[in-house]
Length: 79
Image (cartoon, rainbow, N blue to C red; front, side, top):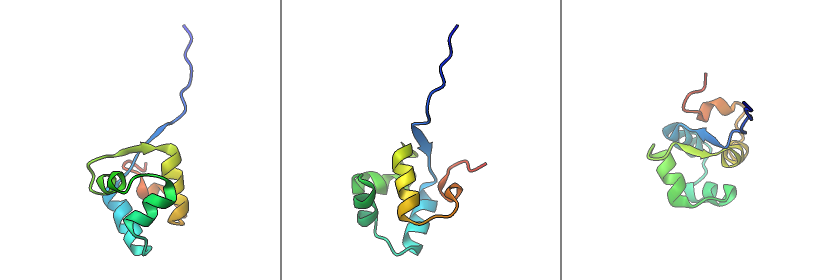
């Protein structure tokens, strides 16, 4: 039996927390979507909690664009 470790490809995100942090940062949904390379309707669905899983790469870009010191602020299950 061979078991291979899989890289994390999806991150469960807290959409309402994303929206609150984005708004506090004075960044529009469309500007953030453009900066991270995703569709604004996708990001809006994430913020409304309709979509929780996002690509790990997109998550990293959101953290970077919003200048978050602690990425756990956006995680659906931070601990």
